[in-house]
Amino acid sequence: MVDALLAFYDEGDHQPGAAKIAARAGVSERTVFRYFDDLDSLAAAAIEVQVARVAPVFVPPNPDGPLDTRIAALVTQRTRIYAATAVATRAAHLFETQSPAITRALKFRRSLLRDQLTALFAPELAARDARARGELLDALETAASLETLEQLRTVAGHSARRAQAIVTRILRSLLTT
Image (cartoon, rainbow, N blue to C red; front, top):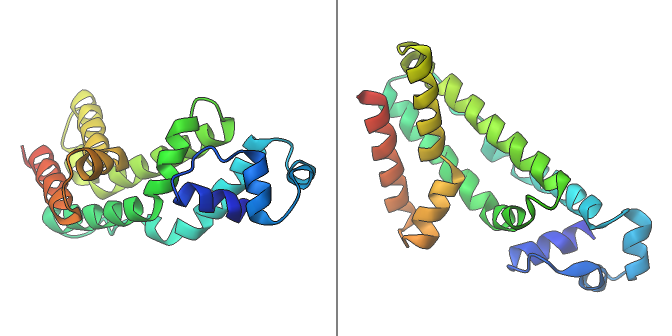
C-alpha cells in the first residue's frame, strides 16, 4: 500500500484516494484501513519508506577545504537531493497544512539541511555578528533550498547544469561579500 501511494506520487497523482491505492496494491479498501487509521497514517508510513530510500543523498558535504570546494559540494548534494525527492516533495507541499505527518517530515528536512549549512559554512558565519550571521544563514538556506531548485528547473525552465551554476553564483556572492 505504501509502495502504491509512492507510485502514484511518482506519476504526479498527489491525491489518489483509498480506493485507488487499494486497487493498485491489490487489496480491498477495507484492508487499507485495517492497517492504517487514516490516509495521514498511510502518508506517514510512505514518508518513512521514502526517507530510507533517499537517505544516502542527504549525507552532509565535507566541511573542510576552500570555500569554492565547499560550495560545489553543497550544490552537488542539493541537486542530488532535488532529483531524488522532487516528485514526493511536490506532493508533500500540497498537503503540508493538512497532514501533521507531512508537516513534521518537511520541518525535519528543513532543519537537517539548515544544520548542514551551519556546519559547512561555520567559518564564514563565525566572522559575522549575531544579526548578520542569522541573516546570512537565512539567505544561504533560501539560495540552497530545494524550493529554489524547483523554481529554477520547473518555473524558469533551466537545465540542471544551469540551475547549479545559478545557485553556485548566488552562494558565492553571499559568502564572499
